[in-house]
Image (cartoon, rainbow over all chains, first blue to last red):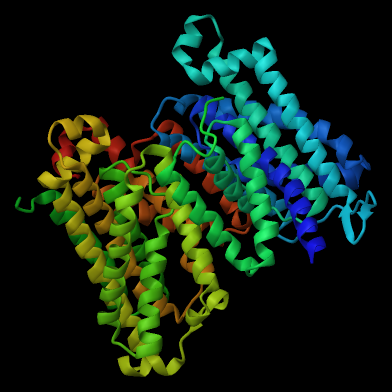
Length: 286
Length: 321
């Protein structure tokens, strides 16, 4: 019996790390730009398909393909910023919500046209680790470790580099940062690019462990919202903690109650946290 | 109360003309598409009260349409209650839920409110998915005999059509009166600057709750009529998040905070959607095209068609609200 619990807890932890990585992308964009990125899920789905195509068409091993996904994410994110967001960045939130949503519609629309909505899967195996009665798939361990590595790199970037400092300055006070000589337009575009790159790489990592369709992104986007609110909007570390909490809920709580109740719990948490402690469990700024 | 003027008369008459066309021609195809347009208009006008006048972005507004639909459907399915009674109960139930939820989530502002409404929609959808008493994930299906009480299926469909027609006219008039009343002025003050509104003595809490309740009432009734006519209801189509976005799209396209805007937006949206779906070239790309159109509206015409016209031609403002 204890094995089942340990198995679920480890599984939940590894899954939670990937969820956390996805949510950090959303959180960074919110923290810096005060924009709720409704194209988050669509970009995650895009990441899934990019890694799939790299693997099937060019034979690039998914974990190496991640580098290309990140590069592509940065470029696409910055492009999206200039096309869809730059004009409305100071407008009321309805405009930015709808602008990012229209980007999502575009990606999903073209994606459905090209790939239809049938499920795809990446067929790789890294063996498995087992001790006692517990077996953990190698791919899950790899995604967990890569997520930690990415989060660490982002942390170093934000706190130890000049560019990272500029991003944090803009998130604290955009006008003041501009007065200090920061090119805020570039920083905003870069932040959006990093956020999208994180979303796409999280999508790519998820694609190595679960089957996916072009519409899968929507589910993970909603999870990312829950995670961000749980950990505190604008707090990267909080997103990681929130991700782990959510991963645990999905894997551990389902030992006791039917899986179909998980969304009810998740979204009740979302609404409750928003009402009781809108700054999240860790509540803080970037 | 302000007396109705030309700006209400002409739009009401225009909608009535639209309603009468299928009745005169007796064409089922025309009736179906006008029914859909009327439904869209009702949804868009309802959302306009909270989104357009009050400035609160309700992103999961379809939840009230789903709740109203489920209550109406269940009342007819389990207790055989008459449609008209059932749909009114459904609408009032949706409004009551909106009122009690509103007490909590209306405290949130801006994007936080938007996320909370998405959360509410998804939570309710997941909950209904699990309630086996009302069909769970598979939903409920009417036996065709249900329609015998209304003189057969054919008559039942016409009845739904007339009820939807009555509902849109009421929604339209309510929208106009809100805009012209002190209540509407209070809502618009909240939209422009909530803190300033509080200082000027607007009871923002009461106003917001009332606006949110009203904007849930009509979709609740509309959901009841739609799913009665549809003959089946399931969580996926009752609480479809995309429908929420469609509602916002229509309000934005026509012009938010105007009375004519959502009506026009719903009409144009239904027509565009129809054309795209019929065209073989665009059929598979219609979602992507909607995305591009939405982005163009947001970037270049944020006040919508009616808003744009009103800005450009000052003389017309008296006639178009």
